[in-house]
Image (cartoon, rainbow, N blue to C red; front, top):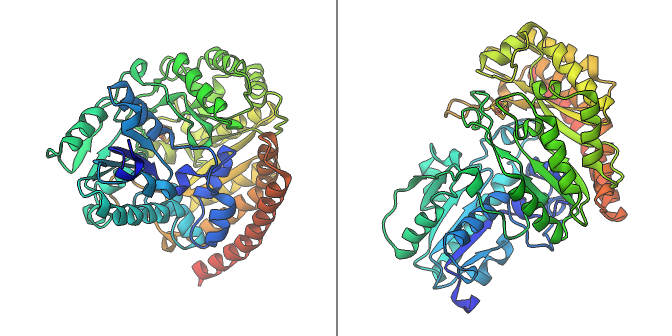
Length: 497
Ligand code: SF4
C-alpha cells in the first residue's frame, strides 16, 4: 500500500510518550517538566526523538489486539507524531491517539504546575499533536479521531475540550476486548457514541506486543483494588499477566535495542500474589527467567506498596535488588512507595486500603521501617507524600515534616504530590498551599537535591548513556536545583504575605 495514500489505521501518541528515554526515571523527569523549562532543553535533551520506533505500552497492546483480531500489518501503522504526515492520507479511516494527560488534571501535572508554574509538557504536547492531526485531516476526509490511554478519563467531564481538540470519540479503560470491533465500525463509517467503554480481555488473552514500548516498559499486572478514592485503580482488581506474555514482551524490547527494562505494576512486590499477600518467589522466579534473555540489562521497577515490602524477608529483598541490577553496575535501584501521610488515620480516611492490617496510629513509623529495610537491601526508595488530602490539618503537615526530618539523612528521595480528585471535584492549586506546606516541599527537595543527581547519573550509566549526554543532563539538573531553591523561598514568602 502506498504510504502517500495513507494507511487505514494510524496509531500515535505525543512526544512525551514516544521519546528516547533510556531509563524509567528519565521518562518521569521529562514528563514532570512544565513549560518553564525551555522547549529546546525539553526537545533536545530531556525528551529527544527516539531512533528506535517506540510507542507507549498501551498503544502497542492496541496494535497487538487489532492484529490478533484479524487486521493485517499493512493496515496499521504505529508512528511517532513527527512522522504522521507520512502515513495519513485518503485511505486513512482511524487515527488513534494515546494520551497520558489530555487536560493536565493528573496528580503529577497539578503538583508540578503548582510548584513550577507554566503548563505541564505532556498536556502541551498532546495539544501540539492534536493541532498536527487537525491540519492533516484535510487530506484524510474520512478519518475519525479516537483518543484513549491513561489520560482519557480527563475528557469525560470536558466535552468542550474534546471538541476543541478535534476528537470524535473517547474510549475509557482497557480496550483489548473490543478495540477491533470499534475500529471496524469506524472503518465502515457507521455511527458510534462519542464516549465508549473499553472492554478488558482475560489476562491470558492479552496479546504480546509486536514492537518496542517506550522506556522498555513491560507490564506485570494491571489494576490494584486497594480502594484509594483519588486513584483510578482504586476499584480495579489487580490482575497479573502470565509469565509467557511478560517474557515475550521483554524479548521484543530487548531485541529492539532498548538498554533497560521497566517492569510496571501498581504494586510490583505483589506480582502473582493471592489477595494482598505477596508471593516473593513468584516475582523472583520471573526475574530469573527475564535475566536469561540475551542482552538483558538493567531492570527497573516503578511502584510497590508499603505493606507489600513487609511481606518480603530481608534476604528476598536483597535477591530482588541483585536480579534487578544484574551486572549493569547500577548502585541505586529505586522503587516508589506511596506513604501519602505520616498520619495513618488521614490516609485511611480517603478510603485507602494501603494500610492493610497496620494500626493507623503506627503508619508513619511502619512506613519508615519498611523504607529502611529497602535501604539495607541496597535500594534507594522513593517515597511520596500527598498534600491537601481531604481532612488535612496544619498538625498533619507538621507531622509529615517530622517524618521527613527523621529520614532526611538516609539515601532516599521524597516527592510531595498535590492531592487530585478523579471525580471532577475541585483540584487544589498553589493558592491552597500554606507556608507550612512550602516548608515541607522545600525540606523534601533538600533531600532530593542531594540524592536525585546520584540516582539519575547511576541509572543512566547503567544503561550506557554516553558521558557527554550524562554531563549535559547533570548540568541541567544543577541549574534546576538552583532555580527551584530560589523558587521555594519565594513561594514561602508569598504564601506568608
Ligand atoms: S494503593 Fe496505589 S494504586 Fe492502589 S488504589 Fe491506592 S493509590 Fe491506587
